[in-house]
Structures are given as structure tokens and as C-alpha cells.
Image (cartoon, rainbow, N blue to C red; front, side, top):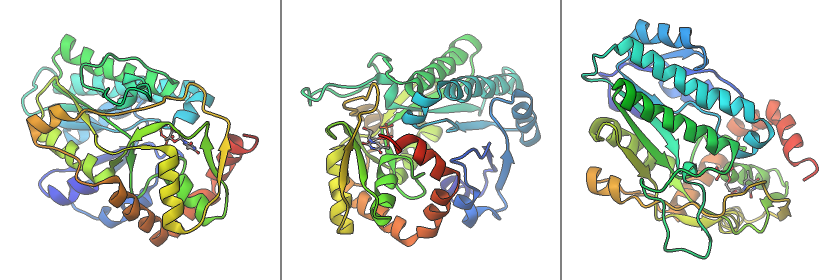
Length: 326
Ligand code: TYD
């Protein structure tokens, strides 16, 4: 939202958000007064409200990032994931279809998916990567719900002709990352002198994508991506969880790892082959993990009150439930 509001003053950006536990309007304080920005509090599952917002602003493009995204939560509460990620996507698609009503010129429904729809790769095959042709093969209720959303987006293209694009990104990190995910959770725990809960043996590999690199990819895909196509976003930043946590400990000069019970169904390795987006749109990640993690740690040091406010609230109860007896 910040990138599009500042880079494209001619676009009206409508930010639609339900403001659940991870939603936080303070994240956009710097642009909330911008003339081309509006906020609508809305549950994407509420089809009537979504349709009314489409009509009110005459929406002609959608970047669909609204999702429940935390795998551990999906294991505890799969229903919420199916509802938001599957039914919510369907409601947005239907509103686009009804509102655009066959007049597809200048319209686009762009769905932000995840590399988790491809399942995982074995640790002993570093030669393997996810391409856009890799079959969908999911592991968690989270990835299953995102895969269902992907398929609905493709069905609306094939069946009704709605112009769509899909991108599947690897693990994002950077500023404003909610402190339930690996990197911000570890940074916050180090700074609060709490142990660092590494699941299983810590050898799982993720392909880390700096949030601004992802935003650059979204900008390119919405403007230049081919309708009906899928683009993988990520690559060249594979790290084991232990490597990530050790980098954080080294940067902050303290931190104590505690190995805890593994996540059920824990995916071993994600790794993206970004050849397609590189060849077609000229995108490659620009931020090396070693630089991005330093920038991210610095942001959490400079914005302590942002994440302390989150941790002191409802999130504290979640933390107890998730890690209390792990
Ligand atoms: P996460 O940030 O939840 O993203 P995802 O599961 O979508 O990849 O987790 C990243 C990796 O870190 C994953 O392998 C699980 C692991 N992990 C831990 O070891 N400890 C933790 O407390 C968390 C949240 C994650």
C-alpha cells in the first residue's frame, strides 16, 4: 500500500482490511492522510460489503493479499483458514466478476499466493527448485487453503474470463513483520531475554525474500505480467532456521537457543526458481539475506514501541498457548 500510494499519485488505492489480530493501522500512519488513499474496514468473506466497495470506488484492479498466513495457527484452527483464505478469495472473485461484468479491458485480479502450495523439497537434493510447473502438493491447512484459493482464481479465469495473474512468493521478512513469524519473534525474544524456540533440529530451509524486493515484483507483475500466468517470486537466499537464528544472535550479541518440539507436518525445504519472472519482467531479488537481516534487526531496534505494543496485548495470550508447554 505504501509503495503504490507514494509511487502512483494518479491511482486511488483502497486498502480493505478486517483488522484482525495481525492488522494494524499504525503501520500506515505515514500515508493515511494521502489524497489518493482510502481505508475500508471489511471482512473479505462479507460478499455484499465487498461488492458495495467495488461499486463505491469503481475498482478496476485487485491485489489480493488478505489471508490468514501463519502455519502454526492453521494447525490449531483450520476452520478460520478455510473461511478467510478460500471463501474470502471466492467472495472477492465473485465481486470482481459481477462488477466488471464481461468488460475486462483495463481490469486485473492479481492474487498473491505462496510457494507453500508446492509442498516441500528434500534436504538432500539441493539441485531441486520450485518452478511454476511444479505440481500443487500441500502440507498444512494453511497451504491447502492457499492452494484452494489459487485454483479458484484460475477457475474464474478459465470459466468466466476474469483477467487474473498469480504470484507465488517465498518467505517474506523485513519491517512491520508481525512478531509471530520466525525472524521478528526471534529478534523480540532476544531483546526481551527470552529463549529462542527452534522447532525440531532447526535444519529446515527457507528462501528469504526481503519485503521491498517482493513489492517491486508485485509492481512489475500488475503492470507487465501476462494475464492468466503464474510467476514465482524469490530465489538465491536459502538459509536453515539455525543459520537465521545464529545471525540474529551474532548481530544482537546475545540470545539462547532452545530446541522445542517440531511443528506437525513441518516442511523441510522451500526454494524458488525465479527464471520466469527474471526472463519476462527483468526481476531478481536485490537484497542479499545478510544485508536484509541487518536492516530488519535495526528496524526492530529503532521501533521497539511498535512491537512491544503488540506483544503486550492479545498476542501475549497467544504466545502462552503456542509455547507454554512446548
Ligand atoms: P514461519 O515464519 O512460521 O514461516 P513458514 O512456516 O511459513 O515458513 O517459520 C519459518 C521457519 O521457522 C519454519 O521452518 C518454522 C520455523 N520456526 C521455528 O523454528 N520457531 C518458531 O518459533 C517459529 C515461529 C518458526
